[in-house]
Length: 183
Ligand code: FNR
Image 1: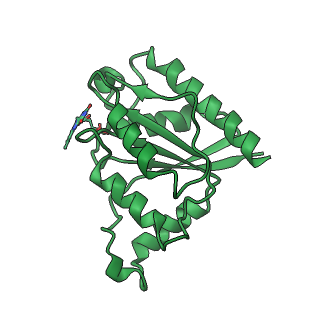
Image 2: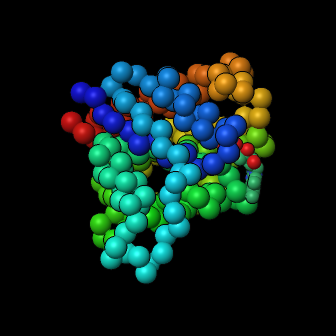
């Protein structure tokens, strides 16, 4: 079977490492996964006043998640947590209450940083936020991509070869895990 994966990118930056990681996964993924890389430039701020009449961009985002079999959150680390744009996307996707678009979806947490800690703080933050609003979260393997500053070319090609098997192992394991859950 083939499973579609919504890959949510937590950075708006053109040269974002998170975006490059997401696009690298799309290339490395086995044939059983179809990755749909979702950026958040057009997603407006969540506002509870608008819940009864949700803006079109929220509806579009929620429908993209609902149409997916699984979700990968690819987050940068901002001040030991996720970026504001990613938290906003999680909040938009999580509502209305009890009707999270992520509900039941097998979920992966991917973090990176040009620094030495590899986005651990962002991953821990996601592990606090996600359990109540997503499906099962893949526990192993974990992935903390540190020192990504020189890992990709401007075009997004992997130039630090040591990162390739790490990404490959993660997306292969994710494919096996999603397949097991969906069968
Ligand atoms: C950062 N950065 C950062 N890095 C890190 O390892 N731990 C952190 O807590 C933070 N905090 C932080 C806060 C803010 C506001 C910014 C703008 C940046 C650096 C961050 O890892 C770096 O800018 C990455 O390039 C961001 O990810 P993208 O945009 O490349 O995907």
